[in-house]
Image (cartoon, rainbow, N blue to C red; front, side):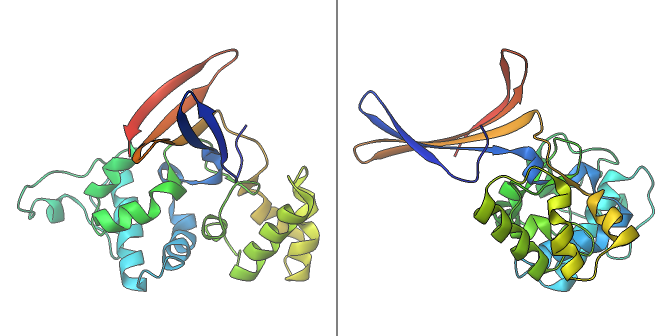
Amino acid sequence: MPSNNSYSLQIGNRDCEVSISDESGKINVNKITDDTRVSFIKFLTAYKLEELVAETITDSLLDWLDEDDLHHMSGAEKDFYATLPEPYEPKNGLFESLEELTLVKGITPQIFEMLRDHLTIYGSGKVNVNFASKEVLLYVPTLTDEMAHAIIRLRKKQGRIRKLDTLKEIFRHFGIIGKDYDNVRNYLTLDDSNYITINSIVSSGKIKNSYKLFVLKGVGSCEILAAYPE
């Protein structure tokens, strides 16, 4: 079962540290829109990225996803990518892997490594409040640092949140009520997705190996979508 905590087990003479995360606790980059542009910039600046860098990445993502050649304010279309030492064209469509993000203007290898565990290409695009980090919660429109911390404190105190309306008191405290609350609620979910990530570190003496698996859950079986040595 997905959790915010890892667990240990022993297989033969090997020690294993395993964590299982639900992709619903991450931001689906294929679902970013003009409506969530400001919120994604807020998510990026939570990682201490400069505002201009965050705007460039966000607008370039939107340009990569949309089908036209019109630039968002700080974005990039095929005229930019044509000037690179090894030119290529933007996708003008959905991301098929997270690694494709490294082709987008502004996303350096260092930035990609910093963000990759909080981004996904799977799921509905709603943020699961039981699994999301503080930074991912900031992607939800109108959520502030204080609200995100309050949600995390609540789930630490009472365990898994079972009803979204449990959060109503938190939002009311910050003046988010009525239609404003309903709007925020539309970006949140409690439903686990069918997609999970399994991270494992296997140790035998001084030798350590790390693996990451993306898995699609099914009825009575699972399908491995991708596997990476780390």
